Amino acid sequence: MLADLGADVIKVEPPVGNRSTCAAPHGCYKCRGLVNYDPGYPHMGGTDIQVPQGPTEDCWIAISAFTEEEWQGFCNAIGNPAWTKSPKFATLTQRLKNVGELDQLVEEWTRQHDPFEAMEILQRAGVPAGVDECAEDQIYTDQQLKHRGFIIEVDHPAAGKHLYGGQPIKLSQTPALPSKYAPLLGEHTDEIMRDILGMPTDEIKRLKEERVLK
Image (cartoon, rainbow, N blue to C red; front, side):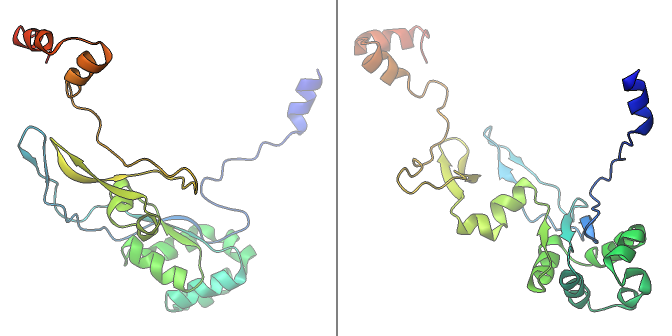
């Protein structure tokens, strides 16, 4: 009975998605696509896999303006178009009230820039903004990850040299071990059979000839 009565008085707040009750604009906004510059990469079988050329549509930037200073910084960064002076966006309360229209106007600007360009413009103006990165962005473009030494090059005997994400945590007294490729199939057979199992060299050779071992 108490549960039934409680359900009548408890109000469940609806989901708000990326929107905020204390910041506007706030969310992810579509940007101009980046051109895929990678012509392809060598496949382990020897055939190059071609990467489609042309701009991608999946480019976004996250923007949040919590304070009036950040809002004014945003307006200045995008050139103070006429709509930024509208009473509908004069205060946070008004921006939240008209957030749907605000998001559309913000995206009209972000679509004119690629996400990294937009991020640089907004961050210079003191506006919290960051690229919604894909794996390719993190490996090839993110300057902070490069500065932190997170991106490493690994030389694979079959696939060649490629960039990979390294250790995200830096410890002063226990540095990360040098990164190495994953073992190939059968790469350490001799070492395991000889050094760990104690098998004679001629026996290992015989088993290889009989195709028991690789």
